Length: 354
Ligand code: SAM
Ligand code: DTB
Ligand code: SF4
Image (cartoon, rainbow, N blue to C red; front, side, top):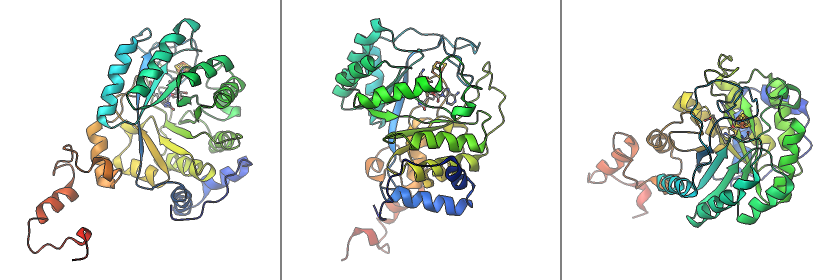
């Protein structure tokens, strides 16, 4: 923490957010990085792993989603996974370096008959020493309390886009429904994870308006996923225009300036991004990712690519530096250090004062 935090605001206007998005890029990134450093270690990135615990045949019609039963995406449907199967995946995620395990289900809302299994999953994940997160669709106030009571740390429920553009993307559940679920999650005492998607065909004003909705909540979501649309064949958005990478990074930077104490997650879409674009997103204040070769149903960069990227950027060095996966080929800086340590001409300035 190197700079004094600006006060946390809950009174952003859409015009202000639009102004942020239009700043000269260098000014925007500098402001975002300053906001970030006031609250976080700039070289630390939180790592979560996702698992789809119930896949496909969703009654909702979200136009971006491969799991909606309204579109034919060729996805293999799966009923709710057995608790032991979920916990085996959680164990694997922990071994790969994740600290949070996020379980997603393609439901309108969780069926009452499945609540006991969900509760067992939460308890099992926490017993492994992982934070727990779920995204199960809409929740009633009672369901939110039941999940919180079981120990659920985070609930993810995205606003996805602006209130004005929302009806172009989803017709089976309203914006107000989403805000209600988020209020139930907050009232039950869980951490809120809520963000949206860039690339749905929305305007810059819509991106600004979505960020204002998130930033003007009585408390900012602790976690704000910013997804880049993953275009899936069979969905109505399969042929959507590509998102400009710089505009995507601008959205992350504005989110960070408006919600400086929140973790901004560089979420879906990383598989299609260059390492350089991801590095810019981290510079803009993104400090959380999903690790593992799959998101819910689509591809994510593998663990090795991410470890290599983290090594190149010096991210989470203290967690991973001694890991075997940092081979000399993958991490030239470490290779140089290892080699030069045995060279008597080499002076290691980091090693101390003598
Ligand atoms: N069914 C639950 C719900 O909608 O609340 C939880 C799972 S849903 C897949 C979680 C979020 O993933 C969505 O709100 C959306 O923001 C994101 N998402 C889904 N499909 C996506 C895609 N193709 N590209 C980017 N993000 C996507
Ligand atoms: C979020 O905002 N993104 C994640 C998580 N929350 C649940 C999901 C991304 C899903 C991408 C499409 C898929 O893999 O099915
Ligand atoms: Fe269902 Fe969630 Fe996909 Fe919408 S985003 S179709 S609610 S799984």
